[in-house]
Length: 113
Image 1 (cartoon, one colour):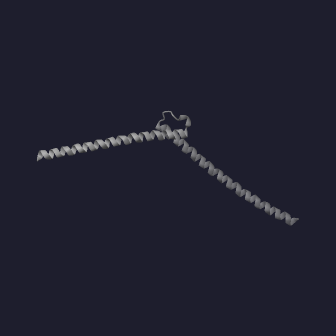
Image 2 (image 1 turned 60 degrees about the vertical axis):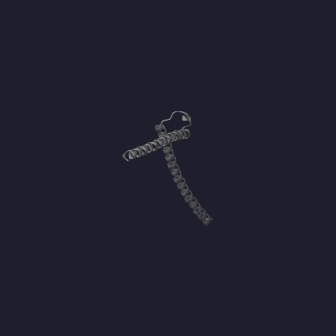
Image 3 (image 1 turned 30 degrees about the vertical axis):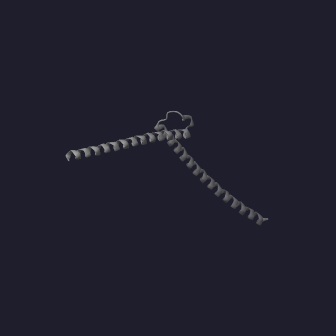
């Protein structure tokens, strides 16, 4: 009976080892696929951000720096847009004021005539 239990334990261990091997192969395949996706993403980012760099070996640091640069430029663009919107609003307010003053001036001039 002890030998039978030992055989069953060994068979169970063998099955566990097979399952662990199968899982390891799946994980390795997933890792390889993730690496390919990362390289593809890096290439796409650099192609969009810097067409001259397309096709060259690119480090992750270069991709990070380029993304930061694009984000900074976008932020500056948004700030400039906000500033221009404020300037336009200010000029429109002044224009309305001048227009209103012109109307008052016209009425006064008509009254004098």
